[in-house]
Image (cartoon, rainbow, N blue to C red; front, top):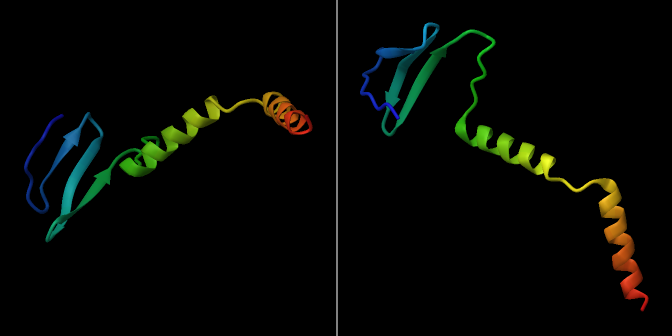
Length: 80
């Protein structure tokens, strides 16, 4: 991880076409601006983590046939 120090209105460049600028600093919050091509996806960390979790859950989701069999087996056990 690269850690750098910037003041208001200072920034840095990522690659050849992504520019990050410190727009505002108020107390313990920093507002940054990102100038990047429209094909570059930019997402906050918490949304990125949620998206990855949801995709993983979808991949591991049991099929409808397995769920139907499970529900059928569960119901037949209660009638015994």
